[in-house]
Length: 404
Image 1: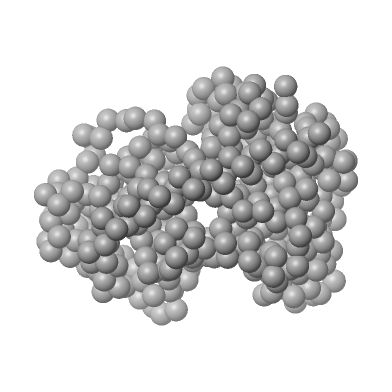
Image 2: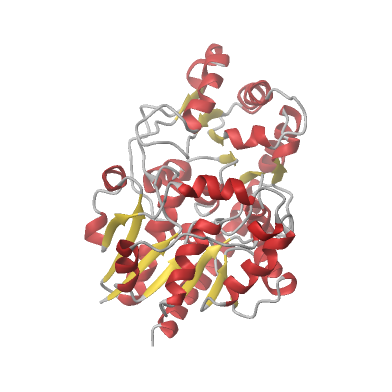
């Protein structure tokens, strides 16, 4: 029985991380049969509750490596000190982590966009993969968006050498693939779909929260990250309110707010808390605007999204859930991932709205585009998704070559 370690994973608080893990485990089981997959977690009890049958799928939640100095070190690396940016991770590997890594056949570096500067220099994440490679373990970057790193010039060479040591780097979209090959000059790069495109669905009862809408239902996901990318003092909630009123009154759509990065069954600190004030602003519209409960796991959330007519989302993984369910979708983009995925699926970025440009008017224009091109988008998604599923299974088969 093959055993794998999923580095870069720490919590299911973001349903996207859960989606990547679930999908990766399913792909590994299809390729290798019975497997054991070590899934690092900072809260094993909470993540186990979110995936109750995980052990039946070969998953074993294990302690995640997240030492207290990590926050301070990445803050230090953000300072304009070239030597610090090249320093990597200066702390020793703990014995318990060495035991975990020593027990596996290979390491898959998951996490979607961990290898980027979206969350500052990723030296803590690179440390685990580097230690595994030092131990002779095959390490593969799995279905990821990568870079760009040029904002931190002193970091470009260290991260390039690090990625070159991996058995292969599986880019999750073409913009990352082109960057890795043509900008960083790497020769170990392959293509696959972001693994959560393969996520299955788990049925839930839609009736208690489904909005009223003669023109069916539009899903909407927005997070605080959108505000961080605004270039003006625009009131994002006011812009969203104006757009939702337009969708309800002009298109006769119900609107379902969909939280995606949330502590399970908690109201504090996630998308549900951020979008909650919209319900108050729009109370006069009654049941035409509702919010999906934040009690659903990633597979259940994808089931809900699959019943939408349209979707507009900021978080990458509800966007992926919608696209992989054949739902015409607009991406509110604040990273390279959304741009790359849309370019690959549609050959353009006509359904991408940059977060810095978000306004009621631009959202209205995007919704009009979805309405006008609905049938074309659905047909194109059906065709492309079959191709992407094939490419992802081919990438999984490549893992076998690394274990010989």
